[in-house]
Length: 508
Image (tube, rainbow, N blue to C red; front, side, top):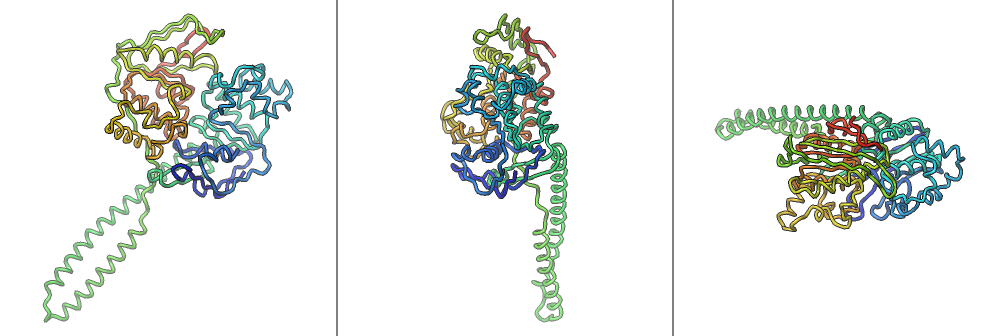
């Protein structure tokens, strides 16, 4: 696959997402696409797979050359029509499904740790857990035997065991893979090429980098290069300032001499004329020297967010004591003998296999905590639409009073999270998953939330934003109850981890 001189522009605010992008994806390449939220990563994958998917909101020029290659595509979110389909209807539209023998279907199911019977289920795709949806979409891709694979956040909501399968799948498949992922561990273990999409100068200019190396090497080289460039640029300007100071002293001295010289001294006048000529030559040399300065490295502005000290929870305060003899979903028993006690500023992570009931459990906990009067709790669902009217703008989502001063403050906060003025007033349905996630955290911060109930909180943040989010949550002075399969999040943020099983919560 070859991309030649691709330029992509947003139709609504005319912002350029990609400019003159060119790269080649060879068979066996595992190219990770990185960049901040809203930089065009998902748009690029949509354009490669099917231009019509992005035609509603962007215009593009350039060439996307895939030949006659079969392309497998995993979207970040299922479409509304697909959500309403039964699992059987979803697979019945996949030609590769009918080319698989029962044994081959069973093998795909085994790799993904799902039952082969699930392919024929009448359950709607939209009613499945996040992890089950991703697994079934991956199954559909495997059935096609594609030569090019496009994956948009493939690790979203996958349990830890399936994440290991995904890593092996990416590493072992002979197909060229272009993928977007928030999961730094996944990228570190699988990528042999990096495509970095950036928006610099307050999102007024886009830039890209193609690097034929693994992610860790790329980031180390980038950090080292930027640090070296900044050091040299700073030293050049420091030396120039000293030279300028000496030059100004000489210039002032010559000008004083010129003002004091007598007209009856022609010899002295000739000498001063030569001195002044030398001063002018020095000035021109300085101007040329300044033009040759190494620029300071341009980087995207980092997001900024913090929680106030008022969000703290005292060490001895009982945050939660929740028990349930039997957790059910419809007629299905998900777990029994559930008990969760939390005191003070504990940061709790809950793991478990896909579809076991973690999200259902977390919703119930959220309901209990949101009713508390002695604590300010906030809930971030896995599916943002549960708590977000996507027809509203980002400003409207954060507004409480509608007063002018409040709106001004909201716009300032949104700016610190790298929203452009146009993005602040776009309907939220037009924002990327990461941009929507930022709004939840911003709302929690503005409201002074003391207890955060988070379902896969890092799932849509870029590998570049994720360290900032993890550090913010690590330093959060209140309590956190979260479901996550993000390995770095679990290690860095959570001081207590439980596994959700049919027999209850087991401390790790």
